[in-house]
Image (cartoon, helix red, strand yellow):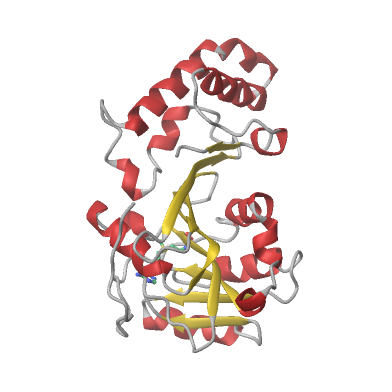
Amino acid sequence: MNITYPRHAPKKPLGQITRGKTARNRLRPVDNFFLKYDPGLLTRCDGDFAKALFVDLGYGAEAVTTLETASRLRRLNPGLGILGIEIEADRVARALPFADERTFFRLGGFNIPLLPGEYVRAIRAFNVLRQYEEADVLPAWAQMARGVLPGGLLVEGTSNPFGSILAANVLRRVDDESAPWRPEALVFYTNFRLGFDPAEFQTILPKNYIHRVVAGETIYNFFEAWKASAAESAPVRTFGLRPWFVASAEGLSRRGYRVRMQKKWLNRGWLVWEHL
Ligand SMILES: C[S@@+](CC[C@H](N)C(=O)[O-])C[C@H]1O[C@@H](n2cnc3c(N)ncnc32)[C@H](O)[C@@H]1O
């Protein structure tokens, strides 16, 4: 991915105000994802990481998900600084009473407002870009890269209203200002309350994929393969949805897709496709 952007961040928040719908515990799976996928990133304290923040960009009408994230991630790193960003001023005002010495709320956009000496170790941007156009995605990712330390993560995705299924891009910050993100994985999660059907995930794909499930596209081929794997392993369903989900991942793996096969992912409803 080659993205270039001006060296100096514009001060005006970049982006647009969108619907602020959120829900308690909606993003719990995303918190768990960070804890499982790269716990070392949340605890790193070498160099600029010592004071590097976890950013929740676009937390919505209320700051519930940011505050929940703060308490979950601080079980691992009690000193972790968390910064909630919203582009809508009233939503910032409503969140400010919940700020403390390690939890901050600021008005801002994709050009994350940082104070001198502040850096970012990870960004969660969930259910934000879904309300934008597909063409806005790469410029938004490029803006969000500013201030993120090399090795940092952007997890950008979409869920259904209660967070029972989700899909997200996982991008790693690299030390290259002209191509700051290396796509690492596309991840899917279900808590199985909706059953299991690969097609369900198509409805909540991140913006860069949702209009691309058409013949000839990589994401289309992936879903065809996942559906075929699920169909051929359907007899496993009699043992439960989870074993069926695991069997479908084995089918994907046999078809040459690089999916993480560890139980800690699959048994808990995570399909981590390392697609690049
Ligand atoms: C649907 S809510 C998502 C809330 C929460 N992240 C969740 O998943 O439950 C999207 C929020 O993102 C905010 N937003 C949209 N674009 C933004 C941007 N460029 N920077 C910061 N916030 C933004 C909107 O104002 C809205 O409140």
